[in-house]
Length: 405
Image (cartoon, rainbow, N blue to C red):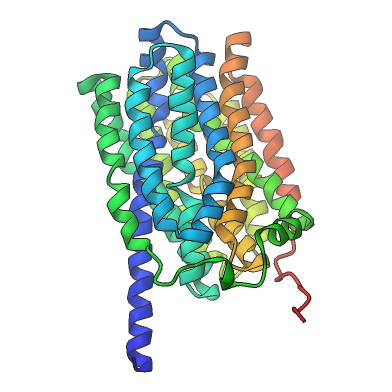
């Protein structure tokens, strides 16, 4: 193959990976972003408390995070497409079983554990590993931003679809239909099938060496701390905002528009930050995002609650919603390289999901205990300030390794 033909082939490969990866993330993230709308119909029919539903969603986030490193290891070793197919099938099965689980424990095992595992194999960490190995280093931040924007587009599109489905088919019928949509992940996974086997021989660093190097590196620890805060904030807001607004007399239409605006503005935010990450230090972008989140939340809970204030908050927080994803993963790739990117991204995301677990569970727990979400809102503000400060000393330069003899 001549050089021009090889370059053309590589260009087409990048476009294919971006398109199929973006569609997969659109489906996977789009479905999960609407789970907050199931809270009230499920607890009303089952006779459960908010904490029961919140705990299942918290377990979902924790299972997603705990399974993420292993999904990443398998994707890095055997190919992302195989993991994505398994993730799509598990996602569909989990949604069906979620609909028929009539007791808290089965509901937690299906809506929580099974769907969480499915998400670990069908979302960012796995897709980013392929992108990191396909896209040139100078364009990674942009490519990660495109994939993250796709997840935001999924939220924007799927939120009204899911509320319509619940209203017309009931909450169980809506889950059945979404299970069918999740099955589309499997054929799309073939579009990110890498041409060469990844294998252990594709680089000199073993999994054990990569883990010891990353966890002993302070900047990796700081990135994990920041991502913990990201998970706490966005999942608490995503799951509990509809109920918070309803408690204050605002209808489901306001909640629907708010979550749609979050998804819409997050498309712009993630793409913009991905582009900015190619020009400015990513640690400063991350610090700015977390600091602005704290300001946005503090303002939201301090001003009178009206539809207008909700929409302004949704637009602002939406711009900042998943905009941490491109720079965080780009820094990991920049420091450690792309060989174990899915695995290392999975560990960083595990920290995110521990924060998600606490955010969604404490939202329900403290609401049941106090009758208010106020404590959790202010905790989210304090954590945002902490994450801002934690990201400032991150070092982005590639780590220095001794050359093999």
